[in-house]
Length: 235
Image (cartoon, rainbow, N blue to C red; front, side):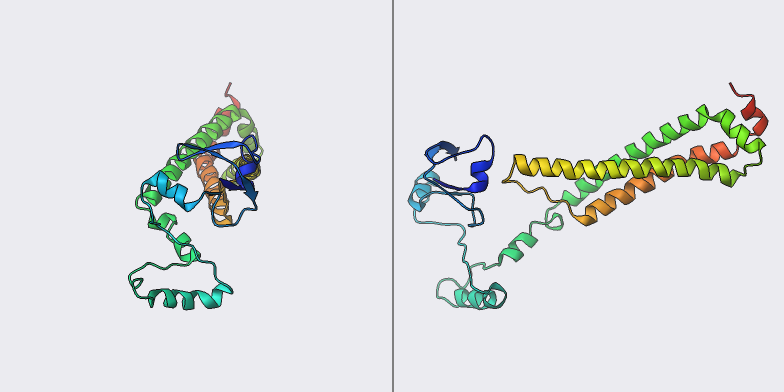
């Protein structure tokens, strides 16, 4: 078997002459090539025929074209015009990859939204509980502020600003940790893809900040409605 350099570098590292198990068969590595050749592992076609029990058959052919943006349509028309190939499905790599998006996978988006919704609700409840506890622990401080003339809007602003500061710090820490984890996983598993798009990062940041502010809104309103005398006498 011939493997590419990403497979060779994954795990404990593989070298020419080592043994690798694929499709429940042991293969001896006879060569290592640079990745980007269309596959990670290469074996003779006759060997593959013996393994899958379908000699003389193939499920997919990959064709590399020169100047792809201009020649792909011409190659497609030429293939479909060949006798016996009129009903074949001819796709570019971009067209094939576009079909592997969540929109083309039944139920994937629903499951993803459910997971995001559950995570958002849990985050909302955690922030709500934390800020409610913080407000209750600072009842006397709130009473002092109100006795000194602080308005309800001022009290709400103090609570929400503290929440925003904590939320921003948490978001920055979370984004940095995410990228560090992605970097570690890419180094540990070079044959797998761990893509972080700006859209998803922006959505996660927006959800986190919105959840933090909503979770702190009720504690802020409760703090603003406290009577200064009751708050000062609170122990």
